[in-house]
Image (cartoon, rainbow, N blue to C red; front, side, top):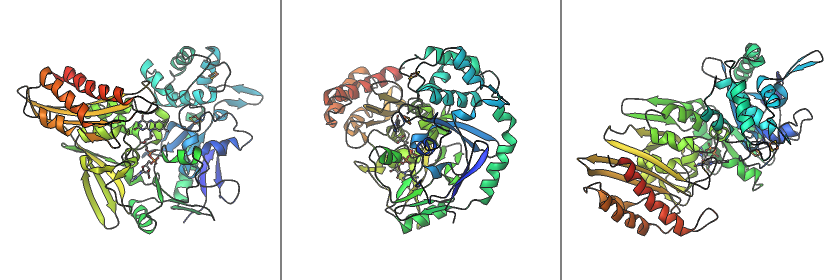
Length: 480
Ligand SMILES: Cc1cc2nc3c(=O)[nH]c(=O)nc-3n(C[C@H](O)[C@H](O)[C@H](O)COP(=O)(O)OP(=O)(O)OC[C@H]3O[C@@H](n4cnc5c(N)ncnc54)[C@H](O)[C@@H]3O)c2cc1C
Ligand code: FES
Ligand code: FES
């Protein structure tokens, strides 16, 4: 078992032994801020909302090429970057003697006046750097999406968007392309030497297994440990609630959990696939899940957050839950005793209570491909479109036969302590004409079925009206 972590930073392998100032739940942000040469990265919110802490992670893909992604370093525990390349704003420019050449994204930000006070700028530059490496000549929507996770309070986004369009035209070519071979060698060196992590000190035990089998054995031994994958929920317990997580099993290094299997009839997503990758996998085949992920957090959040983590949180406002219900998905649970599948509609038992036993982990989510007669849609109502939590969400599916409802599923988030089906409305509509009259009657049943709460996001009355109107919207979009 390995007690130290290694990653590449500033072109060199850095190793941390956790015997000094860092703990296994020190965030990458705090690690960088403790170094005199990496002060560009900033803390704004410490909860994934502002993007001031954005850095880029380079990871080896299956073909030993480096894949770059922007992440919020305030949400990432140090062991999660074991075996990766960590790139900060200080690494972008190129020095030759006394001369410093800015990276094309920095150059475009300077020449286009993309910065004023500068607090957000290193984070914005890193988001643009990730865009530069991944997309050539990106569409405006893609540039906006890449910047959704970065708040700027003084420049205004127009010059920043223009800088992105101006810079991202070199097919990703830059100094990182030139030195990719050397970095790949360093990453392979770390990979080939690494065994599962077991970082143990007086106060914390942090395990990072590499296989499902190892994860399940650990889970059996310590069923009360905190499971973590992307940490976009769990990290807030450390950064906001200042909890000390004593025993952690980090699933982020289990490659088996990152596999996707596509067949004629279903798609099985490993629980550890990040949501940005899920989004890329489903655009054509599962458009409602795609639409869910378009408005899920930001690119930095989706690069970390996993499907297993969203289902695992069991949150009544978890965005994938209603749409997974509408798709009639199954959750695969595994323990060292074996595996079982639970239909998503039976998975949630109460407020953040699920069917999963303590010794089990979610290993995959299986989504049957809907028949050509079935329409599935997702709706999210939030105070703003991007990077916001749902006030009310809905996943609906409908199969019609001669304008008559053959089957319908109406799953709502944000309306109760759990994501819940509007069963009475479903029963009422089944076998009836899919017309406005019947839908309006069903809307009243929806309102009667839920007793939502009032909170900072909205009043109970607003939630009731919104839930009814989402059904009407669904009808108007499907009546043809
Ligand atoms: C800024 C910000 C924006 C967000 N926006 C959204 C949003 O738009 N919509 C939304 O729904 N959520 C949102 N979230 C919440 C969060 O990103 C999601 O819930 C995410 O899917 C969690 O995935 P994760 O891998 O990061 O989970 P983690 O934080 O690692 O874990 C979350 C929970 O799931 C459990 N868990 C993780 N993996 C497994 C597994 N394999 N088996 C069993 N249990 C497991 C953990 O123990 C924990 O209880 C946001 C969070 C932040 C910080
Ligand atoms: S500090 Fe705000 S997103 Fe990390
Ligand atoms: S330049 Fe001041 S916050 Fe963006």
